[in-house]
Image 1: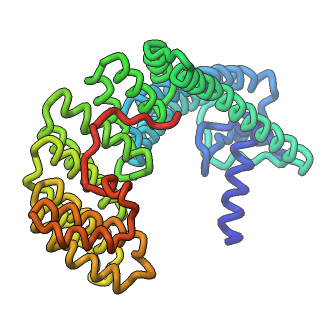
Image 2: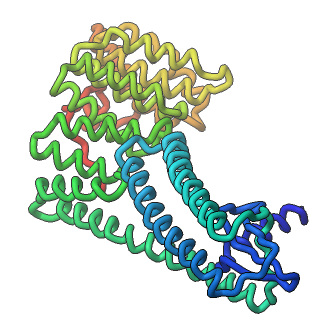
Image 3: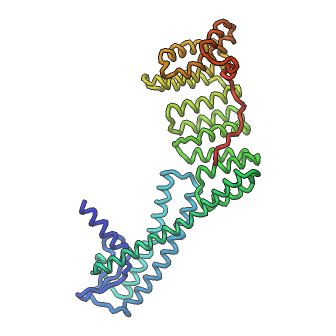
Amino acid sequence: MQFNKDIIKNLFNKISNPLLFYADKSGNSFFRNYCLFKNNGYMYTEKFEMPEAGKALEYRIQLDKHLRTIGWIITFLVYLILIHIKINFWTILLCEFIWLLLFFGIRFVFANKYSKFLYQNFGRYVLCDFSPELSAKKEQEYHYGFYSKITKYAILILLFFIPAFIITGTMKFNLNSKKPHFKSVIVISKIYSLIYPKTSKIYDMEAYAKYMTKDYEGALKDYKSVLEKTGNRFDKHDYIRFANLLLLEKKLYGSQNAIDTFNEIITKKNLSVMDQAKMLWMKSIFSIQNGASEFVITDYNDLLASLNDKDERNKFYINCDKAYMLYLMGQYREAVALYDILIPYAIEHKDKYKKELKSLYAERSFAKRRIGDNISANSDILSSELDMYEIEKYEPQTSPQGFLLDKF
């Protein structure tokens, strides 16, 4: 551990030290080169006075100015590449590699130029460590200077990103005002994306604005982009994104394409069992509404088969959803058969599913009426203990699909 600390301390001292030349008491002269670790000095076995060494230092300072300029240009270009591609761990790693390759490639070229200059003006040199003897006070001064430089760059980066928050706030204001300015949001978003990496919220706001201006293709592209951008991560906002993706894809390319696109993207996400159930519910309702329900029950069976045998709670809730879908699909006898399994199970575990029992009885009652078993249906209504004026609310049904708005 101490060995590692010594290495880090030595490296920090080298980086924070601004000296480019010194002469020791033995009459040797040392010029600093562009190496960061070992052999970062050129030694001559004669003592050069400052006027004599000055021309080399002036040349080195000019090289450093050019290197800083090129470094900022490279950083800016790589940053532009990064914000216009899919940002994930691998693309960030790739951009870092490109930056290191370009920056240290240029640094290597400058190192060769400087070594040739010294050779032409002072002759042969010996590679060594550039280690001037410094007092503790001087070393501390250099450390403070280096900290100041880091602080300055941190402030510059912060100042660079402050406008991003202002732009985002402006977009929110335009969307949430009494008279929303959707076209302004789209223009502002384009300006934002030229300078900063688009966040998920920017994609969501832009998609909403495009939808409201009837640019359905653009809105769909934004939802696909944000879902791809977040990789395998799944969050609460994805429910709205997937719902709107289904709506837009259907509007543009038909319901079957919408389902296919949904399946393609959702398989790339890491979902909990309950998230899987919620997303399957969304897709199933959409499929039934649009006459594409042939795989709904198969999907539910596959999800149930994937569960751990001991996961009784999730099995119960997913089977409740499956029974609901059977009713919506007109398979009333199959729905009743499944309710006949679910209701006794809920009664047996009434401490956990007392609330669910009311809706299960009501739903089975509606399914029984559909197959003409009115007497038994009435019995279920009584067992549900629901108010007769509220019973209609419990009939399984689909609601009209529309664009869902997230909170901004």
